[in-house]
Amino acid sequence: MDTDELDNGFISIISFSSLYSLDIERKFLDDVVQYGLATEKITPDVKRLLHHHIIYGVCEAIKKCSTGRRCILYFCNADLLHTQTYDLFGSAIAKIFNKILKDISNKLPVRVYMTKTPFQYYVFLKTDNKNKGIEIVESLLLHASKDQSDYTFNKIKKYVSRNGLTFLNQKYFNSITNRMLLTK
Image (cartoon, rainbow, N blue to C red):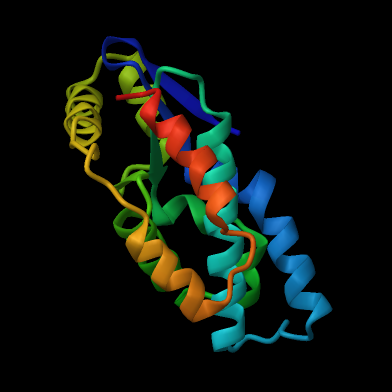
């Protein structure tokens, strides 16, 4: 999984595209095939499976993040153009990814940085000290400084009960809460 560290802000930046392609996509596509949903049409069941796998994968990545660092997901639609999911469902999947990641940033104590600059290009700009790279780093630092100390899991609990996502239970939330408390 592609990551980057910003030492001046104790921030870990996780590339969502590498997280998705290495950890999430295979499980998602296996389930799509297993349940007979491998058509070009994106059904509500496909959306639910994608929600399930992305939320679980993001939560696991956050739990594995270095203790004492804030984690930010770095998301760029262009990074997902070369995935099997994009090949199967086409460009309509991009809107769904945007919606899911916005939902995640609203329902979970996870910061999602959405941009048009691909992750590898950001790393290049940052190491080359280009103005655009410095601008992105400053934007990431600002994004990471948003206070989430008063966060509760009420929104995600309602979402879980509405969609029947059984892996998200109180024990799972507590482990994420403990991880997030260590970074405040």
